[in-house]
Image 1 (tube, rainbow, N blue to C red):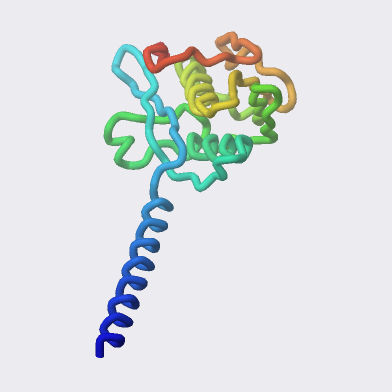
Image 2: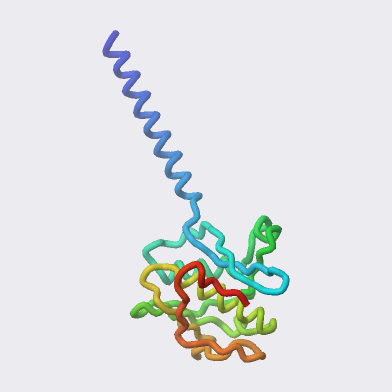
Length: 178
């Protein structure tokens, strides 16, 4: 009788461990793996606000992470984020032509839709969103943007000048306001 009780207890513990493992895996699959920066319109100024998303990008592949993050920026805010006044200036029809990481510089080649539509505030918003979202990973020191294979130096019809490659200011205190 004692052997049967021990076996039942052992089996119960194994089932409990399997259940705990399953719950842990499911919880981990729902945790955010990417930080995006969306635009907040403060009335007279704009700024960036960080939001967390689950993109399922491989954490060891900076190029895949960049592609997933850009796709998420193009989709824009969730309903809840939009209700809080957040938006995205990244065009929804943006095409990412190429992404590569070389010597700490993330090179991102986008199609021309990235530079279409909107005034200087919109262009600055796009540039800040992409820069802050893509340069937060370790190993990425600067961002070089290209449009259809050409280095991006001027963005939009109003001529927003872009450093090539772009270096993100450090620290949360440096989050841009425009």
